[in-house]
Amino acid sequence: MNFESILTQIFQPYFYYSITFLVLSFVCIKAITHYSSFMGQRKKSLLSLIPLAAPLIVMLFFWPSTNIQTTGPILIKTAAGQINTNISGITTAHAISGFAINSAMPSLPPPNFLNALVQVPSILSITGILCLIGLAAGGFFALTMLAADDRVARKILHVISLSPSEHQWLQIKVAELSSKLAIITPKIGVVEDLRPNAFTIGYGENTTIVFSIGLLNILDHEEISAVAAHELGHVKHHDFFYKTLASTLTIISFFNPLAYIASSMGQREREMFADERAIELSEKPSAFGNALAKICKALESLPKESILASFSSNLLVSSSVLHRIGILSTHPRLDMRLRNIDNPKPRSNLNRRNFILVCFLSLILVCSVIAVSFVMVNIQTSYTASQQIIVPPAAFKTAGYGLAGLSGNESSYLLAANWSGSVIINSPIYPVISGGNNNTIVMVVHNEGTSVNSQANPFNNFFVVPPQNVSFVP
Amino acid sequence: MTGDKKPDVSQYNIDGKALEAFLGPLESNIMEAIWASKKTPITVREIYEALKKTKSIAYTTVMSTMDRLFEKNLLDRKIEKGRGGLYYVYWPALEKQNFQKNAVREVLSSLIDNFGEVVANCLVDETCLNEEERKALKEQLNKNMTKKKE
Image 1 (cartoon, rainbow over the protein chains, first blue to last red):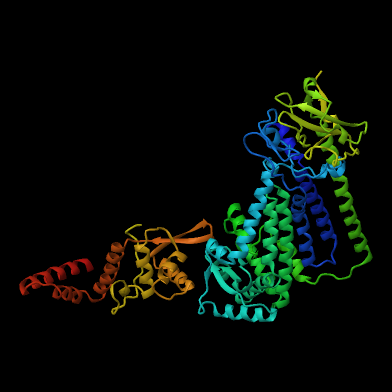
Image 2 (tube, rainbow over the protein chains, first blue to last red):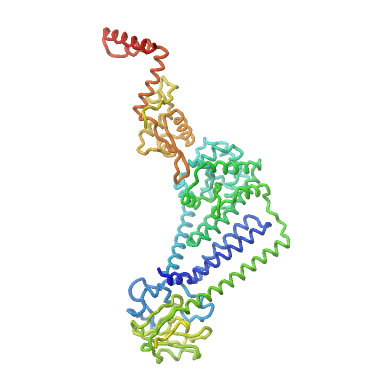
């Protein structure tokens, strides 16, 4: 892949809009949540989903065009609905590099800012492929998680169900805490892991709280009960669905590293939220803090989990009490958690200063998105302008072919060119051509802001090329 | 697997059948399962799943029993890193024949230390020899034991 094709992909609207929106909304949400001490963990975690949703929303606007044939000649529909084939000079490679042929387009879109917005990447471009892989993988993951309940996670993580005679005190405690929270008592399982950990899998009646053998070995009964209360907090907060949604959105943007960071940010808030619930439920509030401290200490002496294992297990569980440090950690730092435990209630005094700050940050978010969008469109336009479509004079005809259909604006042109092997198309962004008979393609060229009476145009299918992109070989 | 491990068979059960003379019922089941298993080393969960097919059993019971077998030198173990995190994997410290040989030797050695000639006479009485042969064997054994004690 050469530099030009890389640029071509970067300047696909889906790609740059999704990246821009994700980055900006992430920065702003991070700033808002950081300075909004009055905001609860639940609201913060929900806000964290906004950056992750941005690429999906952008994708709905820039759904890749599917009217591209992978091999053989490009098919172009004429006004009469016939299909012209074997048009030489336009190869699949050209189409892949950005020439979406939209035969379904009913009228000519106005060539302005909005026009740039409606340009779509080809389904066969790298951007289109990434977009579709992400969507398919995300959809598959979401459906699997919802359809398989806890079965997949049980199998992969080797979860063993506790028999009624095992750890009876724990089973009684979990039932007691569940009734306090008014939730269905989850099942209890264990994993062989020697590292202290606890997590929740499944949802509804199939929820299972899983404790590692390492955790059961190092904590006393009160501390284990506090950890169970934390996990039940996740169940009460429906974190399975939050986690599934966050992971699905992350998978959709799998090629964007920031998506993983944004996802982790939201999950850290859910952890803090569950910590608060654990403190509310515990008879001895210090027990949960002690448990966390013991877990961290024990982990220091044990080998770390591999990144791959950690990533795969993290996808399957809605919560793991295991502490990991780093920007991708789904858990807050221990000191932050302990501070939150000491002062679990969110400060509800929405003072004027905070309110103004949040409004200001939100304004910055909106302005930044608009500003960056315009900048990107300008970059795209200038990049496109640097590309040229060369039409040899021998192929240039001005007569016939729907001249009457044009508005007559001085800056508009209707070109009829014979494309048989004589046209070099090198524009990666703007779709170019359509219509005509077997040997002729009609190309409508005009300046931004001009209009074309599409009703009178004899060709249903045409695309717009800015005049600066067209030059004629002398 | 080495043959020189000294298994702890201090609790000899006179009514126990086969391995159960030296080990508890669950200990015997676990050892038999491990010796029969083609997979070595093996995890507690795998043994638990194998035993669960034939009897109702709790995972934590299997885990604590395997831990005890490790302390009795019947099993060796190490920590392994895998899909389920960090966990112990176990393998037999002795082959089945070696274990039986060592265990019987341990018990006999203890009996001889405590009861000497009586043990020798009892062993000879259990053999299918005629009176003369028995007498000669007893004399020889008693002579050897006296020498060993000196």
